[in-house]
Image 1 (cartoon, rainbow, N blue to C red):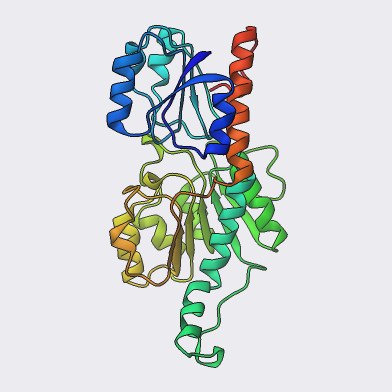
Image 2 (image 1 turned 60 degrees about the vertical axis):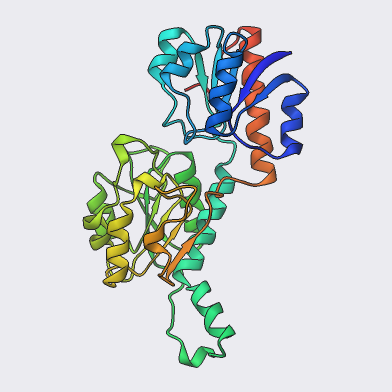
Amino acid sequence: MTPLLLLVAIADEHKALLLDRFRVIEATTPAARAAAIADHADEIELVLTNGATGFRADEIAACPNLRLLAAQGAGYENLDLAAARARGVLVCNGAGTNDDCVADHTMALLLASIRALPQQGAALRAGVWRDALPLYPHFTGRRLGVLGFGAIGRKIAQRAAAFGMAIGYHNRRPREDAGEARYFDGVMGLATWADDLVVATPGGAATKHIVNAEVLAALGTGGHVVNIARGSCVDTAALAAALAAGRIGGAALDVYDSEPRPPAELLAFDNVILTPHVAGWSPQAIRATVVNFIANVDALQRGEPLRTPI
């Protein structure tokens, strides 16, 4: 069986698909990863990681027989693409495998934040009935800014449009398939126009703190921000300051700079919803990422183009 270095933890039912095809070298902690590379470097032909876990240039250099470096999901910000390409190592990701799951989770976060579901549930448990609570807006007629209009951003926009929201977006360039969504050539313009902002842009240095104090101020006191992209895209300190000053209505975050630790600066706010980086996780989505990886390996072994190359 072909040796596979597995750097991400996956459920046994999905791991079984890999065990049927590969000799899996599992290393999901930093210590296990270092030991696996030290002990098996000459054997490793395939690596399955994800964008956050990555794979470094020195690790690529240590594996002389490496043929394919794969990110499980769509993100690949911590894979050293230059080092892989310099070595002739092919690189792929899981583009498209969990888009629907992420878009669904995004809408759940947005609905819960705008409609203040956690606060209303807490009030009810405390014996407070609706007459003593503020009114919270519904979706129809609100303007949603989508920051990053790739496959996931477009699916989020489609779902939001079905709720009657107006859609604006910022991307590196306008998209011909954007439908009625309005294009903004800058983040500030989008945030000024929008009632709410969803962050769906790739991670990395180019988008670090793309949502900063100025963007949050432009979004305004009734605005809500949802981040399902990467924790680095939102300035956590600026978000905490905006929440404390009442300069933003609420936030719903699936990703944080502090992962896997929760964002300590945000824990005291009752208008912040936090989930543990699970937007792209469902039984269907995880299975699809594994099946997609196997399809890429099959293409590699047949000498055909990869299914989802980077």
